[in-house]
Image (cartoon, rainbow, N blue to C red; front, side, top):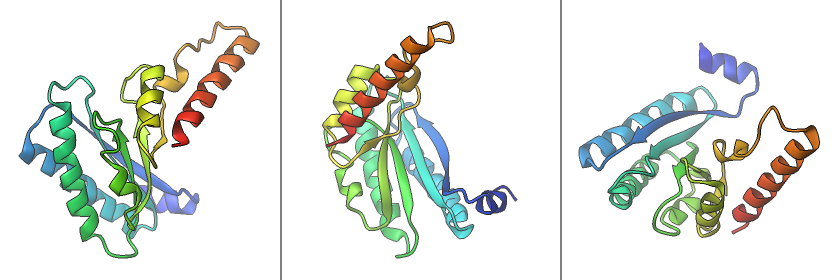
Length: 171
């Protein structure tokens, strides 16, 4: 019913978010399998799924998690039919351009990065080093903003933040 209502409201897509906190090959495989299973339901309803297996930026084995995640995502992307399209929303990786192959995959509409809790400057720096990936930052977007700020100060800070994120996405 929810997906039907989304289609009626002309929604483009919806996401499923999972968080991976430590390396466990079987667990990572299961997370990606579940994400693509739900993605199939979203595709069947006429929407574009946003697959979001977030990797905890504080995981001691983050790079190892990301490598396993990349392999699992690639496997599932290659199993999609020609008319089944997805978006990927992934944590900024430790290895620059780790997910670049996905930006060129015929079943991927877009690869977007989540800031994952990195401070704005670091998130922008990491994003700028990942070609073809654009920002989908929410946590850092509101950094330094407060309801108690004067409107002009609030607007200036928000504008500065958006400009920085935009520039980092131009890679």
